[in-house]
Length: 150
Length: 150
Image (cartoon, rainbow over all chains, first blue to last red; front, top):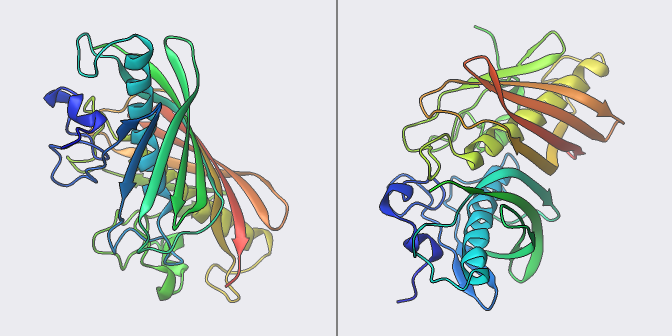
């Protein structure tokens, strides 16, 4: 089975509310590295709605946040010619998050995320993340990810 | 008891994952209008953590999102000289969300949010939201809120 980028994080970093495999109350979102981009899907729960009954904007921001850092991580390993999971870990945390909501998303829609590095200077990485539903571009995000210690 | 801004939303808009009083799986966040600003507090759950064990950035974005729209709503009622809850409703939805994470926040910290309108032109409203913990400014957000129908 294909391992997610998050599966290469050490256990102590696997409790994240958005993407930690060890957080039983979390979203359990996974990102996969394919051909220079990170991809992932998520099916919101029936309670992840906004006041209008569409998919909640904060949920979308949460997924973009985790996916952006996973993208930065995987891209940094690739740029360094290193295997994901090798130590010391190239771990990225969010300095800033920007999200544009272009189209509302019906709640039952599967979300498809794609993240690509726009620029990286070794410590700061800017990642563009798009969210599509039913093939349509619905949300555009940017994550400024910063290399963290350990 | 002081009513929250969200308590003036009609029931059909009270299922929001972030701030809907009728969403039993939601965050149940409330915003209060005081002296030209919206304020609110939130205590994250023990599972609302990021990979490093601090308060999750996506959770913070979710709260800023809901709080920004509540600020825009209450400010619009005030600018129109109308009572909150009077019809037709002045309802705001998020067009864009920007979040800067200045300091990490220990998980058990009470979050204090304050939202103020920076500019409003009748349909678009730009709201600045700050998040403090233990008196320190930790997160700065901007919500571009747009007047929605009904």
